Length: 422
Image (cartoon, rainbow, N blue to C red; front, side, top):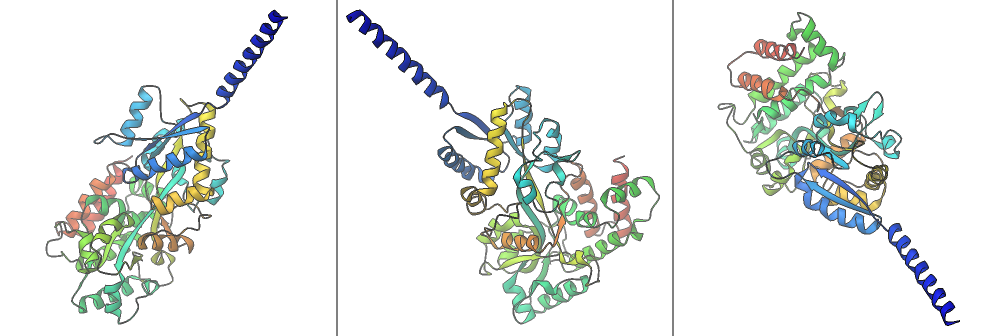
């Protein structure tokens, strides 16, 4: 009897051990990683990873940030070289395109239908959606409302500027108050990637056809109405520039605008932190479009450039099906769960690319961009141009605003650049 009891107890212990083992196995977590290229929100991402892990016990989310002096693109290439990529990678649009063949198809995800117009253009291949739009940014003429209120003798209405003539009139009024109208920063990336590409995004026949014409036909660029109008608007900025007598001088735009030394600055919302630290305008700033003609009914004169500047793709080559599924859940959490939305908007100061997120950005430039998005008044952000575009075309624009070349030569050099891309 005692022997039988020992056997029963042994069996019971064995069963208990087996059950414990099964329990342990069932609680094993799936590790997913996110390679971060937006270093200014590293701390916020690490905090939200802890929060996500607490809310989802079966998952461990880890944030990977490229070492100082190394880009996220370089880090990812190194990871692929070692045979172990990040589960998710956040990259610039041009860099993301290099990895679309390794990306998981996200076409059936719920957030696709909520994405803003043009938000997926850079990550589509054969109609498949291969990337998640993480952050939206925009640019145009940032205005200091306090300066403009004084110039117009009341409360400035941004919708009053919808042609080149109305922008010129506003600049004239600003100058009469003793303030310089505008700062045109002369960094080649600002001139080549942002200022010039406004003219690309509104070509009536589409940008690709415009490039083909420059490459394959002997065309006079000055006969292109959009390019001709763009040069006239550039002249308006050049002639009213605070540093027109020394046009290539590097002036701190965050100080010039924040301190009210200029009323307008051609730049993007990424400059807000600097403006805020120099703010004398009670935090009242916003965007004006860059009008390219004098037709007040032309919708392009009422739009600013807005687009996705960071995408996340899920690796399909070195990750497991379970990791891919958990990565998809995390992206959906960002879009549809309250805690995910609050991370994006309130903690990371991200302008979301999704129509369903009603939380308003916390800074005035973000709010201005959100308003343009809500009203459908946006132009596409040209984020997938050749990597040397901004440096070469930006240098040509620098030569023009410093008086070294005329407008005909400027347009010729832009055409030569694209001719060389054949």
